[in-house]
Length: 306
Image (cartoon, rainbow, N blue to C red):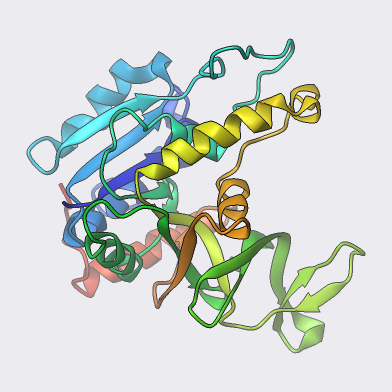
């Protein structure tokens, strides 16, 4: 069974003009998302699913889905603040979405095969899709609790225009993930020999290895992940602290960390030579346009994707 690509797009609003997710960066106005979908098809993915907000379904179908007609089967699912398990309600004053793993949970009725979760505004690169596509395609039918994440080499994920936030990964001798620690400020520091460093809890810069794997939110799961997520989301909502904190979020690494720590699942850290890029800062835009054009000039991508 071919794997599915699941794009997290619920953060996109209906005013497309100012959103980086829909910014035309390719030679014919292609978005970063277009390149991800093109790469996924090349890597053997058989279906594309987006999680969006219901209030711009019609516009999304017209402006986005229409371009993929005849290319690959597509489906939508919807994230809403009140999409909660029975017995739970939205706390008064809560306006922030429930986080990335809540968004993933919305796909439970349309995804029944191994799937890869990505952000819609990150350029992951062909090799990254090949690695996760191969992993998911090679899983024996009916596999459960066997997950993976693409661990990008830290040196391949930096911005020249400021610090970035990354989940720094640790793994064992089987390359199974053992921990993900979110580091909110990572960059090269000139007075440390231009070494990659992260700012620790005391505000001090600490060195990071060039090739240490970091998470760019590119995960591979089997469908049982939805059942685990439903159960743990109930636990999350049952914790008074999470209901009182109107900004508490149910993140993918929170779920994965729980499953690997208790021994329920394994998550293999896949290496990739792909170089991530995206528009973290406004100053990144032109560099991103130039990098995409270079890939087109080199023949990695056709001039017009779809």
